[in-house]
View 1 (cartoon, rainbow, N blue to C red):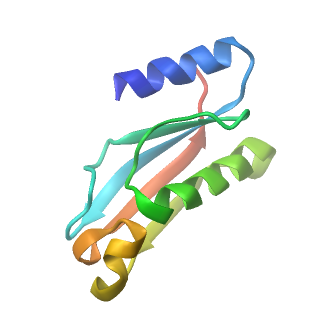
View 2 (view 1 turned 45 degrees about the vertical axis):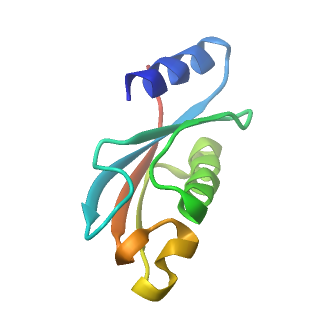
Length: 104
């Protein structure tokens, strides 16, 4: 986690805007625990992880909206057991991810 925040800080020092995504809750089986972080810069750089599969792609899209001025967002991801592996949430896991603008 500290590596993600350190990189986010470096990006802000070079003039980029940065969004920070944090796993705030998980249910059932989830790839990463609460507290896991991912930072997304306004220039498209990404560091860290909140899950995997298409979950992270969706988080990047929301991060771009947050950086565009939409304000912070709470996202919920969950899927049926039969489709779970395809999107990176094994065993029908559920995760909540909070996406906000990073301000050092």
